Image (tube, rainbow, N blue to C red; front, side, top):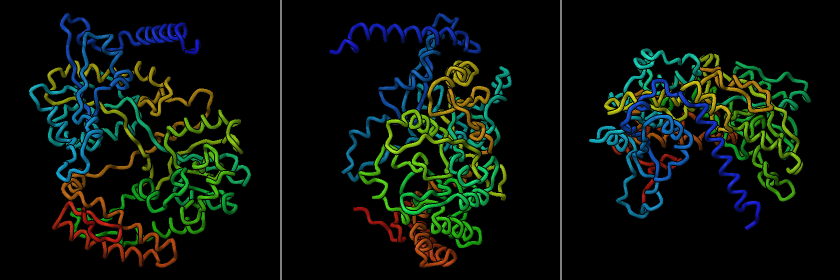
Length: 502
């Protein structure tokens, strides 16, 4: 074995890890606000239920539990509602196979004879649990212990409050991720155009995009994109950030009739289709993929239009900063690549919904089972992972998430950018409890949005006007909704015909 990785190297690595661990423990000693269990001679057991997991929970333990266990006389057990290892061994050819019900699995963990104390799940699952009064509101404990949440990003708190629908906190999350509008400073400077600013409307962003678009073929610089990838599909790209902030519905609240044949939908399709046809935004129909992926032009960033200098503006997640930084730091190793001079501003907004446009993804949300055997210890642990010291430590890591406490959200070392753009806007309102229930009862509704893509494609190809295409989609969608009344689990092809399972 090479001596570089041999005995002395291993010893040095172990000693370095031990030193780092001791420093971490020293930093966080006393972080537990009430030290439940620390002075107790009897070891307490804290059970954490997660939607899925396996025997290897080392990453989660390193991130969230090891330090707490070290500083408290508490043993933490992590219990999955569904064992992820079953995916490897499931028999997909068995027609009798039934997909695991994660919600029922979690509910079973919470109501068994040995219930979990803490629940970690996605927003939709937590919302259902709150509806059934299976989660303990944290507000009374927050007030009693004077636990400071004023430093939390408002959008994170608002997103969690949406879980219960009663303006109460049924959990806390120490991390989140978000999106913003990235822009290439050089492209704007070369065009003599003022770069984008915080709080711009979509129409203002699209106007700037037209001013900086230029070139043809593989040299084309697009003014804007909903993402950074080659082969974009405008129909899907516009759904999450543009359509969702308008809160346009595809069908009515009872799933009885389509609602797409409307002036608002027509305006959306007119706006986005024109941007695609005028090559202001990239589209798979107006891009030759072979030109980008040819042996002559290929590089590690070929599939990224922003890093390739082909996008003036684009929507991107907060963790994309890591990718830009890595590429810029390795510029000398990438063929025909110039480091990107960039910054960010807030996501665009619609005048109809000012201040709303934040795409917020809340990280692990820690909630307490309403029948938790060790509710006090559970609350103490939640305070720990959402506390000031934990946020300070977590903010130093090269994480793909940001900490929820604003005072510890800072740009990556050595960089300067408008980091507040990630959390200035209010999050997009979630679906109502009634809408979530409807989707659960009629799974086939998920196929309805897919059926609109061929009609939008006809608009892109100048075969139909937006008004004509949306009318056709309305007719097809109404037939699909009628079929779902008879068979809520029906699957459909894009043309609206029922998909026949083999």
